Image (cartoon, rainbow, N blue to C red; front, side):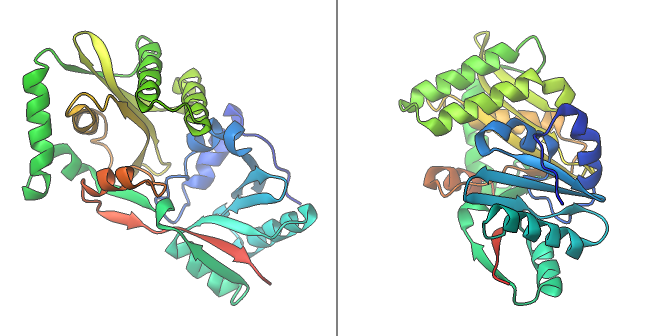
Length: 297
């Protein structure tokens, strides 16, 4: 029987230990991501032997994470199936990458169907390329940065600390105001951002800002995946009215804070055309396909 509970900071140690055994660089495979979105997605976690299992949603709209850890994978999936049955819902496992899809097919042949949606695939980039932006593919990016530096000669980069967190929140709120539409999604994201900043040091997050004229005009932050190979950028906000602001925060953060990592995962595009275009413009090294596995056994 799985005993689900809301994630607490004290869970980070054992959750990270499980996540070290993840078979992909899925952006959801970080403790901070689970922790800050607990309220929005009703995220709960459970430990089964040496596996981490997450459950999301309410009422009949329930989904699970793939079991992450080491040991008897089949037994862990069967626990998910039993938990879903106890709730009277169809077992659905979210964020299945190719390696886990193969494991499911091997252990549960013909019992799962698989639903794909490109909006939930991850964009993963080489840190070395994002640092230099060299070559013809990044010519426009370099131009954006050159123009930004020309128009903002007093710009500077800073690492996020307790001294500038409130300014980051204000920058995020200005970004929402520029959108001109206070949708629930923006409110939920802002709430998650505030949770992240309230627990910034404890979560082990890393972030950076760009100043111009003494004012924070862009910020970004995220966390390393356990294992140390990949960093996940969870948030990046800047004024769309300042040409090159997004481009320069991206490069400066990579250059100053991500040199210990091989890859940076910049998450999904959620099917938003403008976001998809922006992420594709950086020429991802890996387009990580994920799907929903639906149990029909």
